[in-house]
Length: 428
Ligand SMILES: NC(=O)c1ccc[n+]([C@@H]2O[C@H](COP(=O)([O-])OP(=O)(O)OC[C@H]3O[C@@H](n4cnc5c(N)ncnc54)[C@H](O)[C@@H]3O)[C@@H](O)[C@H]2O)c1
Image 1 (cartoon, helix red, strand yellow):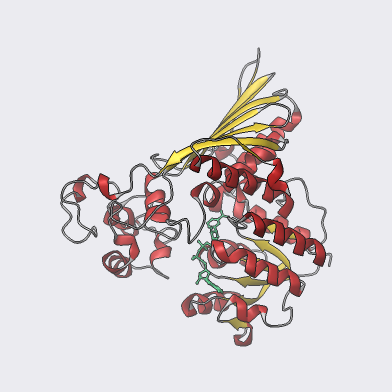
Image 2 (cartoon, rainbow, N blue to C red):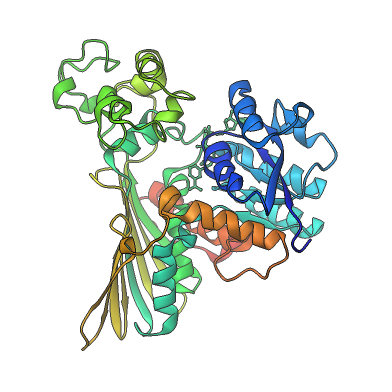
């Protein structure tokens, strides 16, 4: 379908489907068009339908209703919640859609095998949204490694700085707080990190060990006088950085009173206003005390990976950081590289030479949406749909499955007190 406008259906028009990819697609009108949308939330459905000019008969009250129709588009974006991805994507593949699906594919090993089989049997393409690969930051690191200046990669140390308020928002009060409803946090939050680690190293992972726990966000750590909700006369409010009014009203990065109306504010209310946000904090899940929620996912975890050929990689994920984003150190036989994604700076130290500092922030690039990754992923998916040869960045189902196997092995290891888990038997 070279050059033709790609017709796209979106299942789930929430934060990712409507805002992240939906908005990117509005900037690509000459190459792609959203022709059908589905969501169980009528307000979101109407907003997304209106934004893309989708006629009423192509707006569906659920992904299931959309998937009951004959094929309506060339590709489907599956942007529903974690445990829905495989049922929705498998049905779409069987209907003949190519699929771009949100991560994680699934927390179940048998689902990874099932979707791989269905995609193969139906001759369809599946791209998984590992947005970090596409960022100028990780693209620069990958090119540096592949150029050979660092020699052979021996170690990589990566840190995912979740950030204190992001942990509270998504993993204590929000959608990803309970494993049985979503996935273990090492899969939900870190499948991107595990994906880029395997991709950067260019080798398969042989075995994994892991430790971690939910150490802080639980009742036993509630300060004296803590109320069940931040707005119900909490006596610990002043000194608590997790106070919902601080995060959603007055924090300079996230608060609506500081002008922020995007994520995470728009998760509390569509078209947010101060009044709507105050109401959400007073009555909804995002106003609960972080020590009195029903969360069970970890707030810190480390993963050690032994790669084919002997390299060792480690990832630390921690809630307890003031700034978000990734930091990474790559160590090779001829040099090392250090990078800070938040600052968009990379320092390359070839042994015996003056270090080179690359300040990507000074280049005129658009870093909105996962450091620019959302837009570049969408562009590459449309490229793929228009028949362009994908480069090594594109995260096909097969490559994404590798990161999921590492995450599932890490979770198994964590639950078995750091037992070493072999990956090969999981590949099936
Ligand atoms: N790639 C990334 O970097 C990235 C970042 C954040 C979230 N995610 C993933 O994206 C997915 C969506 O996250 P989100 O933040 O957009 O969540 P969200 O809750 O804002 O959006 C999900 C939408 O799916 C809708 N939905 C639920 N059941 C449905 C059904 N049966 N049919 C149609 N729609 C249905 C919901 O009403 C909601 O609007 C999650 O799996 C999440 O883990 C990926």
